[in-house]
Length: 379
Image (tube, rainbow, N blue to C red; front, side, top):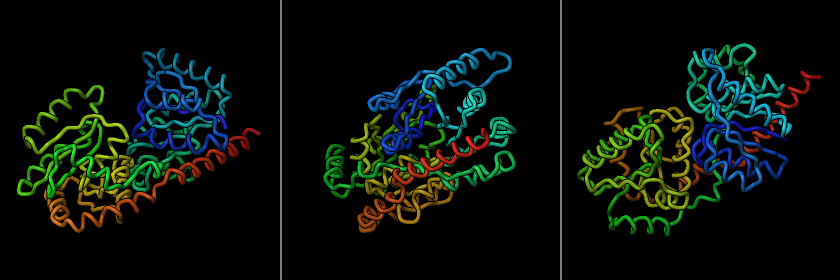
């Protein structure tokens, strides 16, 4: 099956974590993926090691006043579809669906779309209305689907909605005391010291300022805050201000680790006592799942979808943006070392519910169903 994947994400993180798993599981079953992205980054480089063709193509929105960039990109994509005899188009983020939809209609190829964040009524009507309906809308969690329901109900038939969970290749993530001790020794943590942290891009939606405030309120506990993350292009000023704020607010109790590779992240997640989620909204929460897979329980806000990943056994959820309750919950967990130790095995079991193999098999069945429906209408 020849599938063209359109993605704005050039990194091997966030929305492409699941895509990587799909490729690994489905290429042996007959998937022949092709990738088009404005940024040929780590994801495309990794896909190239599997022999997957990748193309650098802008994926702009259509513009009435200046349509030429959109039309040129659409023409280039059409050549890719023809060259590889593409049978199905998968828009990996919903903001690339407008050009994916035009491409699908021009080439008579069905298109499916993954929804990464809560849809708004205006966008849904513009992107999916009328004859622009996708063959499938994949929501990455049940709560994300319900949050988007008011925007897509009556626009796309509910018979085309699916919950397609993200997941991890869980055998690649380890919960090991050796990794825990290695991180704590490298960070200079003494016996009895406590470590909380988070791994994410430095974006306003992550609300890392809340985590700084929680840590500051726990000054009576021997707790340090660790932040791993990257500066998002275009948000350099915000990242600088955020890091300055954290350093001024917490002093030596704060450590910024910068961008970490997968092995370094695993060591960090093993070394933390708690992962604290302060995000306003997450489509799924890949880093939260990575933390659980490494045996680190999570305490934090529901963030629309994160609670679906954490509960019932991976930690605790408090009301969104309630700093007082978040602080109290973190304090309770950190004050009970026996609970922290027991929670490590429970966190790992919670993560095992999100093995990428399940998502891959579901996606494979949906691809076949979409092609059968499309071929039936064509005949």
